Amino acid sequence: MNTETNSIRVEIAGENALIIYFGDKTDPRVSSQVQQAVTILETELNGKLIDMVPSYASLLVIYDQLATDHLEVRRCIRELLSKLDNSESSEGNLVILPAYYSTESGPDLEALAQRADLSIEEVIKIHSEMEYRVYAIGFAPGFAYLGEVDARIAAPRLATPRTKVPRGAIAIADRQTAVYPAVSPGGWNLIGLCPTRMFDPKAEPTMPVQVGDRVRFNPISREEFFAQGGELGEIR
Amino acid sequence: MSGFKVVQPGLMTLIQDAGRFGHHRIGLTTGGPLDALAFKWANRLVDNPVNTTALEISFGGLVLLAETDAQIVLAGAQMPLKINGVEQDRWHAHRIKAGDKIEVGFSAQGARAYLAVSGGFQVEHSFSSSATVTREGIGGFTGEKLKQGDYLNCKPPMKHKGYRLPETHRPDYSDNVTLRVITGYQQQAFSDYQKRLFFSSEYKVTDRADRMGYRLAGPEVKPALDGILSEGICHGAIQIPADGQPIVLLNDRQTIGGYPKIGSMIALDTARMAQMLPGSRISFDEISIDDAHNLHCLAHIRFNNTEPEPVD
Image 1 (cartoon, rainbow over the protein chains, first blue to last red):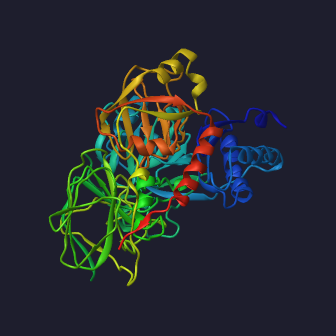
Image 2: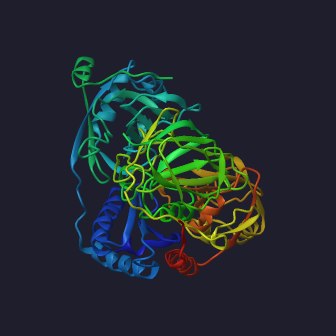
Image 3: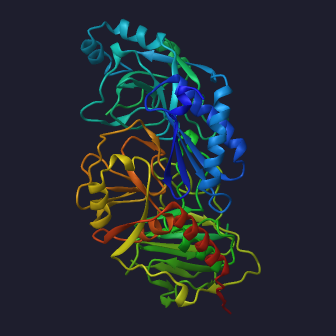
């Protein structure tokens, strides 16, 4: 066992759920272990699982109490941990998301640049040069937490969340970035808009990304944004 | 078309099946009935498979006009059921004819009742379920609660049986109960004193109690942590935000979150809690995961081996 696996803990979450902690901070290596665990447990506990929730450094495993119990699931997890040692770290797909960065599409871009003592162009360059990892999906259907944003453009959540953030809004909160999959309330700093639908119940697949994938934003012009079906939407 | 016209939708009536499972990875929650036992009984009393699409009526006020012959049943909270103005027994299947008016009044005790129809309501599935989650805009009719003028399609089978559940088997929805909690998650971040406080105090159901979660009010419980890296939240998880007031997360919860959790309430008891109205008092009992597992399996066996009585 290497040092990483020694720090893995399993805790009870609920009557039919265990949670595996692979670490306690945002780290691509830890995230990769979470992904491997999802794949292995799906096979090992086939037909006995109800659902799984992978997140930054943990995996919630929800099982069917009429088909298995916490003892068997714990044993499977122990076996899984020995397999993790030998696996290569997983590299998800690279997904390019078009991004129309501007003060029109990103009402917080200017304030964020000022606070960071950077020009708007520099903020855009820093945000779009980084390759992000999808650490978790949650909050709302299709909301993918991407990390980590360069520390220079990290920004705290707004003191007063907006009541209406448009679909496609590219946003930053602390060292996380995301694209709002639907119109919703939100307290993240808006820096642009993405014309790609992040969640479409009628599409297959429903989402362009999954946990473990890599994402890069590709700056596009206003014209390209509209040509790709983008809409400005209402911000309140 | 055959089915039911929604004359009056009630405060919140939702199309539900057993829930949406296997889609947490794209951020979809489970939805489904808050009181799974009453929901399953409703379906069984009209001879449906237990996960058939039915209506969850919160607090009452639903009026339907039948445009089909069918059997219907109302199970769960004490909402008076009237068919063509005549009060009828709950937990009891009733034959109705096209033209009949079905009224579900406001609850005398309990908060959720389930109206099932023989053959089930025919609703398009999204992500393998008809369960309505309004927060996500998914399931039911475009993810919304029932509105006046909605039409509930159904195709009642030609021959169907109806049953009644003897009174001794009907759950009681009295208040002031002790609900069972398994300690887990960040429980180590709660000192022995904080845990004793939690398990020995009485909490009140606040008016911020909905399908997402029940906010409780009582002595403040403080973990040694402010927040954690966002992680998966299971059904019944008890989250303790900065104000120290517990929130028990239910069917429409967010799938991930970053508040410390002391443990989780068992599903048999979240069902009881979801029948309580604001102001009800509850307290908690600690239970082991082994005991919780046994209780769940026993409840399943009890349900399967309780024979309802055939009617007409």
